[in-house]
Amino acid sequence: MIQIRDEAADAAYALGWAAVKRMPEPLARRLFTALGERTWRARGGGVRQLEKNLARVVGRPADSPEVRELSRTAMRSYMRYWLESFRMPVIGRDRIRDGMRVTGDQQIYDAMAKGRGVVIALPHMGNYDHAGAWLGTQGYPITTVAERLKPESLYKRFLAYRESLGFEILPLTGGASAFGVMARRLREPKVVCLVADRDLSETGVEVEFFGRAARMPGGPAALAVQTGAALLPVTLWFEGDDWGARVHEEVPQPREGTRKEKTRAMTQAMADAFAEGIAAHPADWHMMQKIWVEDLS
Image (cartoon, rainbow, N blue to C red; front, top):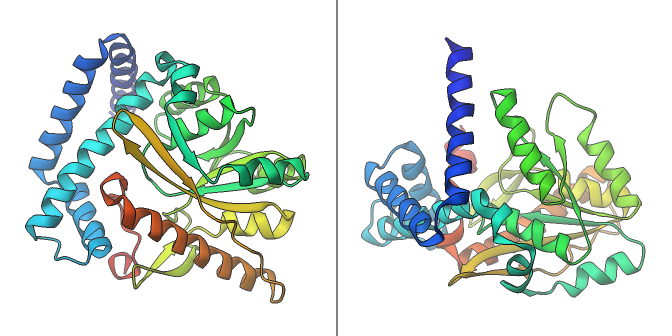
């Protein structure tokens, strides 16, 4: 029975992927907007957690009209992410390159010119697949990590899709040490991109995030400490039909302390940059999972 469900899920994704790519874009947008509206109105567990998370960002009760309306906009933003992810192969390199409005990106080029690798750390904001593809158009293909999906055939579809965008994808589990491979890439030097506002290992670093304790992965900071790479937090949002991104100031490596202490301090600085970007564009933060310690307990 499990195998049948897995095969059905894979077939559904494959059919949806093919259909959405071939639809006229206005029709596809209406379809995904309606899907976001329906999901928001159903107010399932993911939407309720999204509202709890957004309430902490804006400092309002989770059941307030302001947060409820913000979550509605966030669901539309989230569905736009999926629409664009499905349609990325037909969007075209010129549109990906020309539609991106980026500030602070000179830091990436300067670090690479000096022979330093770059760790780009991002929250679940805007369209991070698009940001990775955009970086490839600038001549900097990225290495990243992906959670292994089930069934395996579905994971391979996602893998092939992202590789078609120029990404090198490392499995989070079930393969060679992703950390070791990324460290080698950074020393070459290359760019590593990691979505880093949700800890999947249950061994993450505790940080203060919007005034409360949360857990975030220490991997981006640990890679920077080990390799000397530049750690650059990046936040993303949608600007009309285009895309916005801000490359925040490089997170400095402390001069003193153990590797663990340096990693913790840099992860906190990364979280602070995320908080600044999320506060500016809360509707484009698509966090529907638990990240705050009080929710995880």
